Image 1 (cartoon, rainbow, N blue to C red):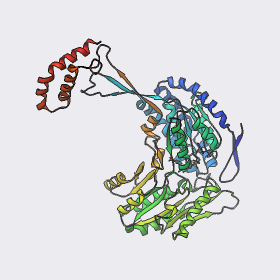
Image 2: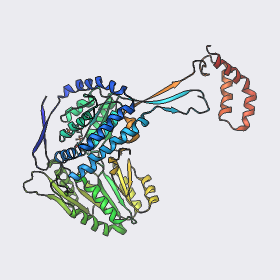
Image 3: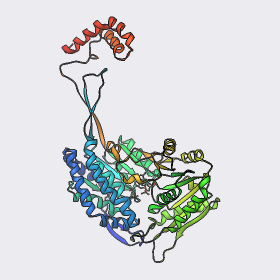
Image 4: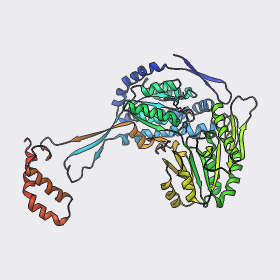
Length: 521
Ligand code: NDP
């Protein structure tokens, strides 16, 4: 067993240490969770919900402490720690606890008046067992917290592997559930780097909920497929925003600035491409530049800071490389770029707006995990839709328009898992809504009722009367054949042929009916 030191990205100072696990020890940890999980699964969903309600109450009281930890370990401004991560998880716990029992309840299946009349069938959702949650550093609280809450509500045990850049938050998630009385050992945190993540995937966990980069996501998906287990993959994004000529411009500028620069742009569904219709391009560019220049870059612990440090020097270097590449290819930097903060070893990038960008530039095709908004001026909405859809990613997209019907028409044509009209990305904080992407942005959905389904095995349970036998059982003979032919006409044919059918097959039908009631051969 080793240890992992967590550093504050703004100051470089150590803020805590956790014990790591050896990859070889991961299976034993999963086995231990598997011993506790059946007792948890025995509880009725409403009882499990009471633990989660309690967790919400306790977390509401701990909100300042958790938000401060989040801001100091990950570097996001304290206001965002509240609004984008901690408070939404309190809200989310309440939703999971209130709606979970209904979502998990047995659902009777309407068998109709046809072939299967008389059968009683229900769909039952059962826990998978132990599931793995592998989380990134950029939303190190809300992503694994929401997934853990739904997995627990569905009756599972959880092994959580946080990013090695944010281990304290991973530990704090376990504590949040244990403080509410969730059995000790039901949620275990496996601390360490990528090799621990790999060991988690290769262990006997029944499913992996992975959020992270596309490259690692492919590897995780392949490893799961080889072991016949499922994976939900929440990967990168390259979200477009389309600004229509009839957009409420001030609102579009404010919303796009927020969704592009929040969390210093280190957001999977942050806006990374803006397509603005030529009619409004000039005022939009002037507005977005002014909005970017107004943002306060600085100490994330201060209430009025709007943009904190980048998570690491390496991340900042990738962002700078992509911006420099665009500028070298002819883009114009309207504002922003790397900033020196005397006395701070962290990496800081002031919100950057690029104009004169073209579709071929790397910055329009590769994920740029930083506070950068590249803007492309298009002729019309058709061109915007074509360019927006020309991407390997398909996480989110937004349309900015005053016309709701047009917004919804455009939403249908956008190839992404989520489309927001006059907003962007906020639904990650609304756990009642489904989250996930298409293409390289991943597979499956988290949150919402669909996130619950991902945490469950669906079992079909059917009741048949012991006093009647099915007509499709043996023996096969001409009587059965004629009866089936007649029944097809009666059940599914039009009114005209029914009389003919009855005349030709009525006797066989009656004989077959009597046979099913008698039982036996
Ligand atoms: P990574 O893929 O590097 O890491 C994600 C997690 O996987 C970390 O816990 C990491 O551990 C772990 N890991 C690394 N290698 C392996 C492996 N071989 N097997 C299993 N687990 C492994 O992503 P980042 O942490 O850098 O996160 C940023 C990425 O996440 C971006 O691409 C972003 O778009 C995406 N993302 C997607 C979201 C979505 O909802 N679609 C939401 C948020 C982020 P360690 O960090 O210790 O190396």
